[in-house]
Amino acid sequence: MLQALVDTYSDSELIDEAVREARDRSEADRPQHAQQVEVVEGEIRKTEEASERYFCAFEAGSMPEAQCAPRLRALSEKIAELRCRKADLQQAMDREQLTQPTADDLASIHDKVQEAIETGSAQSERDFFRPWWRRSGSRAAARSTRSLGFRVAVDGASD
Image (cartoon, rainbow, N blue to C red; front, top):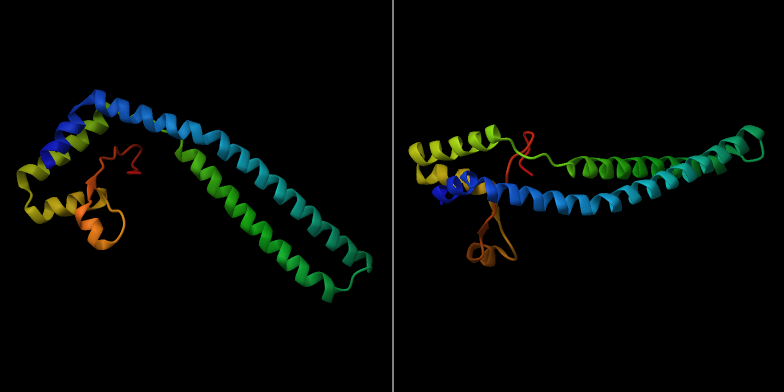
């Protein structure tokens, strides 16, 4: 199995194709994420405006604190949730900007796998592959349907 990994990371055409496909998928998602960011920004603006109206009503004395406070708390919570959603979307968009692994990146991975082949035990090989196993369905089904997916680490990340 480790030799298959070495062979895979040695095939620059295969790696280039995989990165191209991943980049195409991520670029396809980018406009949708950008649109969602705009929607969330609009919701934040509306919610902040509503909060401001409550503050103005309270300051003008036309609405008592007992009436304003619960609503302002709810609006503040909604703003916080929306800001978290916006940050999540922006992080997703940042992750979508894939960079091609360099020859040095691939050589480093190749060397690590080769070292595992030369010095590793069966247990260390299992530990080496554990992050790459993809399972589906129940545990029993997972044992019989394991597949190995190779990931190319780029910019220090493995996803």
